[in-house]
Length: 109
Image 1 (spheres, rainbow, N blue to C red):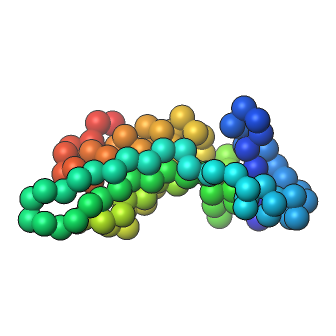
Image 2 (image 1 turned 45 degrees about the vertical axis):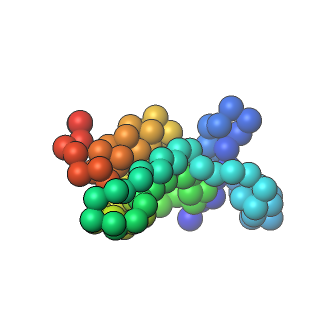
Image 3 (image 1 turned 180 degrees about the vertical axis):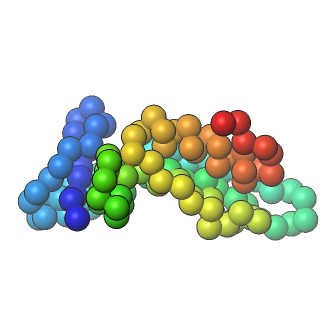
């Protein structure tokens, strides 16, 4: 399983040295986007949508591009919603889709 870090421009690059990867992972913010959604109806509590750089290729089929980004919803009726992406741009679009899902809106494709 390949490991990745982000270069100074925020682009993923392979990191074959596990100690270098671990040091980078501990010292860098891997958050790509976070949106807090205040819930006022039904008193269900707050929801947040988080998109992160995972640092490990989650393309378990081993075909195609590495899957390095993940969006999740925490809280609310869609708690646990998850989607993964191969690029930062796709992850940011997925983040916006997840916000709509979390708000109970129909997501734009």
